[in-house]
Image 1 (cartoon, rainbow, N blue to C red):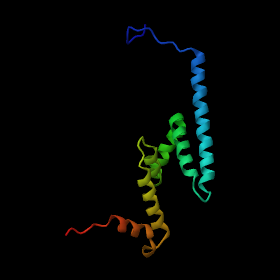
Image 2: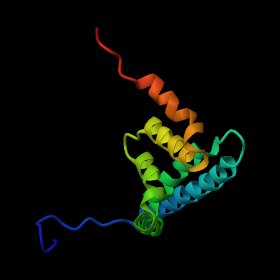
Image 3: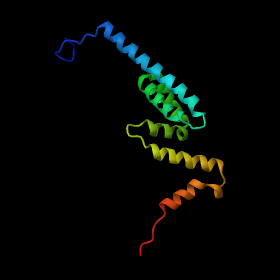
Image 4: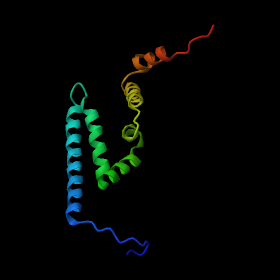
Length: 132
């Protein structure tokens, strides 16, 4: 019996503990492989590696404490760059909002004010309609 309850302690067999640990290591390795494939795919012209990269990050951050600590440290040092990734890692990610925010941020970084097509497009789509 344990000190805090009247139930006998639950014994975990060494084989089930090893299986769980092996499964966790396999998931972490799969996550790192997805991250590597996503990084390679992110530099290709179609940018199809970014979703794969995000899935790999989700898998690794859920299985590795050390990776989670490093990610939190990175978030504290560079919150502006990590916040879109954090928004994509939530349970119900706001994918289109994050993509649109990144398009506007990239456009602001690269183009002068008069040459920003995404900003004009947003104003055309979401302009207020006059009521008669």
